[in-house]
Amino acid sequence: MHGMADVLPVSTPDRSHTMTLSPAPATNAPPAVQVARVRKSFDEVLVLDDLSLTVEQGEFVSLLGPSGCGKTTLLRMIAGFIEPDAGHIGIAGKSMVGIAPRQRNLGIVFQNYSLWPHMSVEENIGFGLETRNVSRGERLAKVQEVLHLVGLDGYERRLPAELSGGQKQRVAIARAIVYKPQVLLLDEPLSALDRKLRERMQVDLRDLQKRLGITTILVTHDQEEALVMSDRIAVMRNGRFEQVGRPAGIYDRPANDFVADFIGRMNFVDAEVVASDDVRASLRSHWGGDLKTIAAAPPEIGKRMRVMLRPERITMSDRMVPDAWPAVVMAATVLGPLVYFECRLDTGVTISVARSRTGASDCAIGSRTWLRWNDDDVQIVGQSVDQPYQTGDLA
Image (tube, rainbow, N blue to C red; front, side):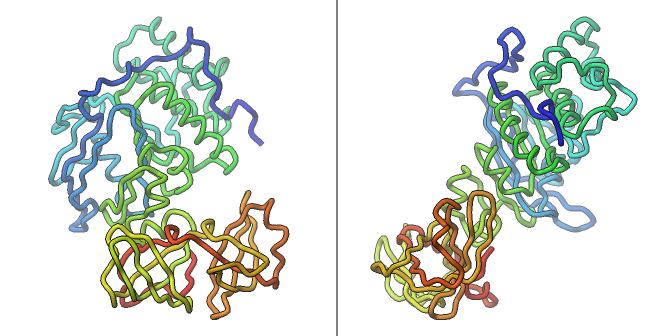
């Protein structure tokens, strides 16, 4: 088990040791990063397809998506390791065309730490400063400052082989921020850590980013990591952005069924629109009953639509209540503070319901229950396709 030295300090550090990267940006400051209509192919395979993204000063943005969606390629393109076939990258209002990676003033943290095994912690962190011709005295002072900031005081002489995984990752973070980069790029930096340490590091790294005010772009395939750490999330698939927005907005109002499927657990059902007005639609669902939803632009009558309902939006009652759907509890799975119940409706369809562990003791397997939800918890996420999810699919 890792010790407390494996986590970043969460309390506000002594101001005499606080590292200041930059003042709060002016309202007219240029974007920290501007990606404009970028395209990239490898061996005639299109990897990035006309991508555009603006990252503001001090913002934390996550590139989230499955393996092979293009997120790491985009990050490496911002870093300057890959040139776009079309479009351009700007950093702090300046075009990066023809600008080498080391001239872009970026900090980069990789998944595998990339520490020099024969160098001490102090030498690893100070190496970038040395290549920038920073004097030895100033270099040592900056290294001490950043070591304090990440909670590694006293580790200066240790070699990477003498460190835990969490300590190595903090050295990599310290090395990336010691020369005060304009933007910090993180390529799945926490994926090699065990779950408990990774969750703690997510919170502490986010705290560090806020205190420093440094613009940060994170590549991750971990939806929980993106939801916890980000100001905004860019969900990617097949080299395109499916949705860009704040975590709560993406979770509660996904743009389509891919985003709904990828982020969080979900019940999907196909339904046909049977009535519609300016704000509400009524749909005859494959669950065996009618659903109502509040929609900004309800679809026309007769259309087959894909509808979603999050498990945690469904309530369970041990007695009949108005507008409830009768069901039987078939199974239960405990995941952290939540219990996910598989409930079989009287129509034979099984849907998932999430409930807190403290309120789940009365939901015995085989017991009768009544399920209910609000109209605005039911969301249309797209038109049904020729081969839809099976009725009651859980993503």
